[in-house]
Length: 291
Ligand code: AHG
Ligand code: MN
Ligand code: MN
Image (cartoon, rainbow, N blue to C red; front, side, top):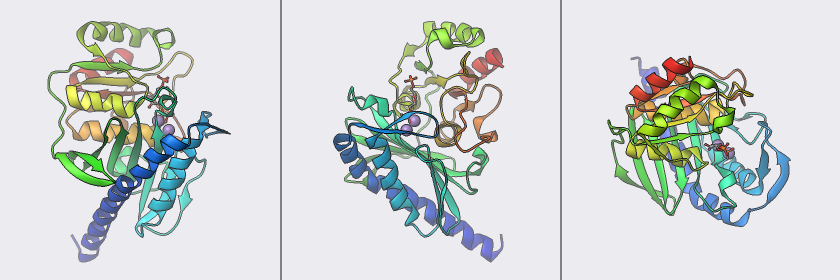
């Protein structure tokens, strides 16, 4: 590798580390926002979802802090129509508050992020790192980077490593499928019916927490293609890619129903995708049924 390529690779590594630390450092303020900004905002995001005041506050906090990092060129988010740009080499795409409908019943919520080498909308193969935070009984963070997945506990925004090699257990235990039986296609319903008898249901309305169940216990999470909405619900760039990168780095598989989600790119910044994430055998089985 030439000297300049070497330098730019190590600059990118540094920027990735700064992004991860900055997101960790912002989490106490996001927890505060979740407690303080509990109402509606009377606005709608580019996906057509009502935005809570907490969605907007979390988005604003991450945008300000991440664009302050020298190497970060853009900030893209589920909560804003356009990509915010400045100078830099790397690009961050986020779901600032995942599972915000859980705010009212005080259930788990999170933050999802991906760091890309190309400006979104872009393919999952351009991810350099991704991760998520869970605002649960404790605040934890899972980060995938250089083929390794690490889990941290966050205390006052500082990371404490608790697992330096998160790997999906070989034996699957849990499943969580979004969308509801009435809205599924016949093919998905048939394989879901089999899995229902093999694994335990874990579905909480926030993919961060449901996917962390899969990382912990093994299994499968899906928000599939729906009869009335073949594109499913979840956002390709902000939710799909980062989570696919984590699950694949932890030894599992991702799919959009036909191929690895990482091999695909969203048509537009806010496009949705069906997704299937978890132990490889289960994803192979679902793929061969729905495809
Ligand atoms: P968001 O709050 O960012 O819109 O995301 C919610 C997502 C995802 O986290 C979760 O798995 C799914 O929507 C839940 O949808 P249902 O309420 O349809 O189950
Ligand atoms: Mn979300
Ligand atoms: Mn969200």
